[in-house]
Image 1 (tube, helix red, strand yellow):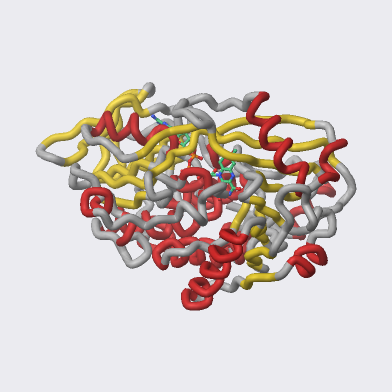
Image 2 (tube, helix red, strand yellow; image 1 turned 135 degrees about the vertical axis):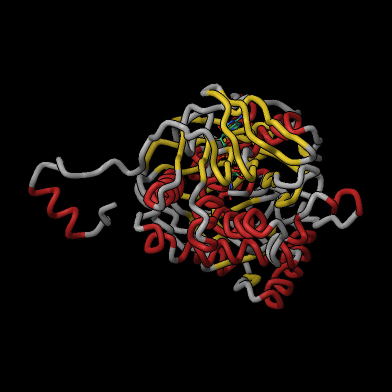
Length: 415
Ligand SMILES: Cc1cc2nc3c(=O)[nH]c(=O)nc-3n(C[C@H](O)[C@H](O)[C@H](O)COP(=O)(O)OP(=O)(O)OC[C@H]3O[C@@H](n4cnc5c(N)ncnc54)[C@H](O)[C@@H]3O)c2cc1C
């Protein structure tokens, strides 16, 4: 595949852009593959990519029921950070964050990684104590964060109402190399790199059943016929319970809708990402100028990929206390995605009761930031059949054995 470069852009500009190749191929499914990955979201595509890159395994198909990146990967608010409390979480999220730093070069696709800095506001004494503790934990984990006072918060983000009517800003947990990236580009970049390695990305191919024999998966049923496989990786976020049901096991995962919205574009006024967990909202400004706003998850389990007015009203009503500037803005659009929540708010990267079937899910409201690290860890699990150091703590067994990785503080508002 031809590389994207400044010379390629110049060449195509001169000949009316008639020479671009398709970014990835759309082949018909083969009768069988060494590995099938179900789900062409960021995590599924990153798994396939690292199977090829790290282990030389390229007889891989990624099956996607819709279009690639059309699930949560294309619906999230793109916050990237690694300031988690527990060691296993900090390790995998920091691995992911560091891979984002070089992703554009690695994938030869501009994913617009913007390490503009992420701050999590402390608006109660309880949060001050919690974030100070996280800053200390991060120092030990090698994650660069610091607890900053209200004056510094005001300098970094002048549009915040530091005095706040109900919740004055008492400080913040600041991660200077956190930020955002372009979500579609992440999915497209991985898809292009996988296709370039000879892998098959098959869209509009829904897995409807999983075949097994003697405790091992032999293939999957799809709306495009049966496809055999040597190994199966299930990476379908909010649909994980369905796929696990097809494979004959249950997961400790609940699916709920999470919503977000963007305002009309305005001039640049905010060049950091701010999360305000007490008022339960967060905001950043996109390169186009839209204020990107997200809130909490629905209070009940559901599979709707839609937003709802009352939720948006609740989020914006709370956020306007901290950011009075948004009271005059018009909303441009709103949407929802189905996120997969575990009880300890940590993901699952695990073997399953079927010997050659592996699952990656439970990233809940905050898995975009984890995509490269998760793909790295999942590829190792699938290739070797055993989890490596990044994935070991995230096995399904932890729910049976009570080894929870409690991230409900770091992921309380999540993202
Ligand atoms: C509104 C919102 C805001 C968010 N904000 C952030 C944020 O700021 N930062 C952050 O880190 N995370 C955020 N997240 C979470 C993040 O989007 C997800 O954790 C992450 O994208 C999950 O990626 P994935 O690849 O696991 O899932 P997905 O991208 O959902 O991919 C799973 C794919 O599996 C496919 N699939 C399902 N069933 C089948 C089947 N039977 N056969 C074939 N294919 C199937 C689906 O169509 C889908 O494309 C947010 C999520 C939402 C909804």
